[in-house]
Image 1 (cartoon, rainbow, N blue to C red):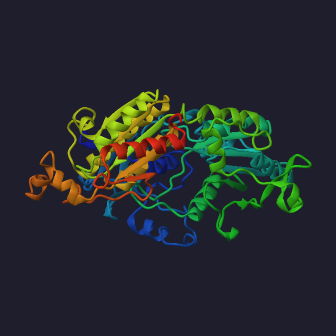
Image 2 (cartoon, rainbow, N blue to C red; image 1 turned 120 degrees about the vertical axis):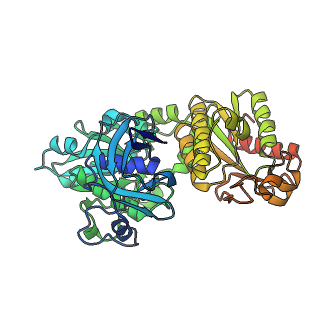
Length: 493
């Protein structure tokens, strides 16, 4: 969102920009603001950060082209409330426009999930006894019995230590926070929880960091909260050289469930015949999808109950069914047919067709890349809200850009499931159909930035199903999608 106000522009950063901004405002990131190009480039190189670097990753802000020359910028949350004021000291291009400069807090943040648990670094540090070790567990996933046993063992090894659980969850969704918090009764009485959002890339639209770089960031974040020791649960990987870390890592050895002694132990202490490994995420997800209770040896009852509430069986779980493809590919026709089949199966369904959304939800937007992305985000937001309440949202926009589709997937999976259908009908077939005459106008130069002609379409590499309406009928395409939904458990068999 950009708009002028009293001679200054107001801008709402995307998810990565907001995550960086929150770390800056909370005092977790020790920088005065967003990095200049030279500083960011030094940290963007592979390998460990340069000696003496205050922070291990680039912190940059992506803005639209219209803000390339702004000197003062108000950074706002998605609800429009001001968070900080940026004094721009440098504007540079790194594929997109980036702004650098110091920030000044404007008001305490109010937007974001579990806001009451989003403590500042100073708040956490002031509440701890610095004479005692502090073990930080950084996690973005449920704490099952295996992780809980490892935490208790680490605390025993450290002696008289305190425990801080840092829950990494998106600003705009619950993520794993609710389920992680459900493990509170299984941890020491004075365990402290704090919620935060770790960025996964230097800026919006930039490639994600490696798992090792994300682990290095988590280590610096934990140190900012006062941790002396660190355990990671799913949030990246720690570098092989402990000297790179500002905290001492807790060795992540393999643990298994000892079926004879009925407890979790290090794998090298348990005979293979009586060792049972922890279920992986896919196995847990599949059990939840089928409505199968999680076994007591795997996870505590409070965690199992929270998972069952947040991830009900797929026949009752919200779903975003997202069709993408070129104009004229047949995606809207197939989407309408699938929506009708879903309705007949007894589920609540809402069809969000690209053209209809353009006329209503996104009226006034242009076809610039920024406005196209905003249009898809709006569709994703509405669809995720439908899924949050157990409905099925069928979406059929062109959605040409992979990064924006990934953003919609993330929004959807915060509240339910996401199923991507790529309608891969060839361009020449789409253009031959040209029911609306759009390709002809694009070829004549009457429509600028038209997907497939003068603007790119990025074919999805993560599609759950690929269709080609030039080689199969509408009925066959609809049947294939419905069959996939039944096989996945979203529709009754």
